[in-house]
Length: 489
Ligand code: ADQ
Image (cartoon, rainbow, N blue to C red; front, side, top):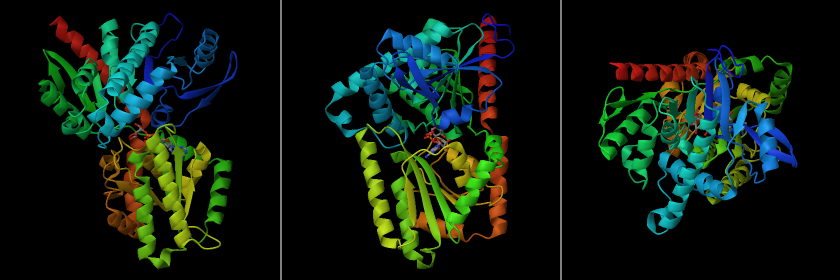
């Protein structure tokens, strides 16, 4: 399709997400430093190249002045990014408030904050208003940049009002919405004061996607039980209009990881790590520091394992890499203190003058360092209390062609549905079970490790991020064709 601004053959894909894949830091009145930021969605879309992709989102910085807004817009254009400007108060109420204090915990089965449920309905109301206002600002920017034939793909719980606002602008716009977190049981969703409005707004999309069939089923149940609509095998029907609802499990760009292992600097890094941890088995956790990732539970399970298996005390090390996020939210600050306290206690208890059992790093690692760590790991521990999918488990498998290490995986991560046959599945709340699984993983015979690894490796190399995005967008295109056919009949 020939486009007026000279983008030729590929279809334009407008990816709308709360955060752009780059973070902006102001270095002068009209100068900016742009850094690629880590995260699940960014990692997944890095390898997608069959569309002309433009990102629309917030750059993570408050820019109140026009000079700054103009110069940042120009700087971001080079990275194919279009900014949405949100002022500090909206960010506080919408992002820290409604998104991260209400929707995020609720969708991960941690419930609503007590104070919102009891007395402070005013704060709930103002957060909800800010949420709608922010979604409207996103819709304005999308509408401004939309051209006929474009596909608009909205991402995540931050933007549940966006499909409705976009359709208000233009009914012909192809709009898809994908949720990266779990969608909880309708019994959980119905506790949310704005439950119906959110569902109705999402239903304005042409295609609604989730990581797993279970999440899709929960969403359809919420629509039938809360809104009284009809659920069909295709999706949800409202007065003859069908919103297609389906599972699209995300993947990674596995070849990027496999190729990285061949780079000389990664090989050097692997050699250094092997020397550093010679004579000890390496266990690894890589998570954003978030309560859903079950980091304290994981570390307590490792302590229990050491306690019950003294012979392993100087023969195994746990490397826990936890990149801090949402650092201005009090719950996250408390979690950081809690993890530090537990790690300190365990290292004091089982450490020697020359070695400690847990190396805990509060920071992000660069891609090459991360690949090297995955490659030297004997056992990866992914013990999320809930997780939409969990890409770390996929990345670990991609880097294990040589070691064929073992993946211990929470049954509450979406990845359990795809890697369940190759991983050891655990209930992360059951510390005794996780401790026993660590013992099993460390002593697993080579042929069993090989078999399990092959199963997972086959999956992650065939269900990639490219395939995920391609399938979603092509189904979104088909959905529209179907809708037009129906109106013609
Ligand atoms: P996240 O909660 O961010 O994503 P995850 O899927 O594990 O969780 O992705 C994290 C990404 O960040 C991975 O690519 C990982 O390599 C990277 N990362 C994490 N810690 C890091 C560190 N210390 N240093 C460097 N990189 C680090 C959300 C949902 C998930 C869902 C994804 C994609 O919560 O359930 O799988 O979106 O849909």
